[in-house]
Amino acid sequence: MSLRLVANITGPRTARQRRTNRVLNRTALSSSAATATICGNTIRASPYIAKKISRRKWKFWILVWVKDNRLTEIQREFIYMEPDRSSDIVYHPVTVQTRVSRRDPELCQNPFYRLHHLFAVYPDGSRFWVWVDPTAIRERELLSLNFDCALSIAGCRYVADLAPAAWRVYKSDQELLAHRENNGPVEAATDSDCH
Image (cartoon, rainbow, N blue to C red; front, side):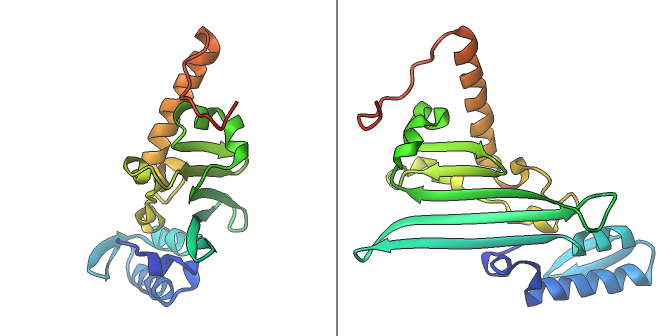
């Protein structure tokens, strides 16, 4: 199912999500293996799958900073939560935050930033961050988020599901940093502002 930005801004309380849940639940109750057509897509769902998809929660928002009539930063956050398999109450969130802004001084200390200087993808506590400099055109693909997994049967269990391009770069950078620790320093990109 194709999920669009407008449907994700307020999460599962949108009219589209309520309509999807009603169709899935009604169809799932009418037969043991039901087929429903939602927004032009056919979904074959058992009662278990319909219930599983309808209990998911997600939040998506965009923050924009403007200074002196100029756009200075754009930050997006996508939080996906699915109940634990053994409980309806415990949720395990997967959070990805993307940011387009000028470099913050604290990024100088980040080993992932020191590899590239135009972007950084890294975990930070319970969040996975994707930072891209506004001048980096080719690296903008790292900002793409996969909203389709929210309504897929498998869901968005991992960061790799929500931000596949950024996750691939992160895994590659992680290997490079591990190599650096084990075999001596790997040349980092130079930045005149970081000492």
